[in-house]
Length: 140
Image (cartoon, rainbow, N blue to C red; front, top):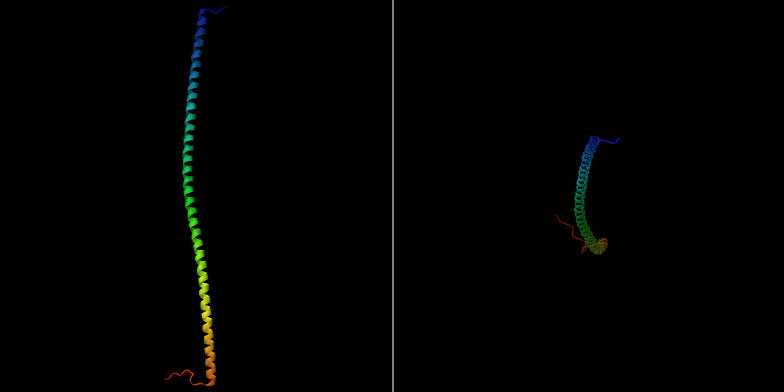
């Protein structure tokens, strides 16, 4: 039993319809894949752009932090220099002050000695009853 021309034609028509359906599915699949690829490329581009912005922001912050660090180091150096100068001045002032105190102490000791001698002399004169050296009594 061989198929007739009508059956063959029906089979060809059925195969053409199946090919059209498969072609439609294939076109849908290709279109879906193209859309998926387009979405994936868009998302990847967006992430790349965000990373670029983040890198630029980080670079700017890094530069600013480096500038602040340099300013702080400069200020610390200035303060250390100032502290050194003040320490030197304090040392000089301390030495000068010690010298002045020693000088005044010597002068004070000399004055005490003179006062002591004068008091001793005064006491001895009063004991001798010498009217010449006794200070006059105030008169009213």
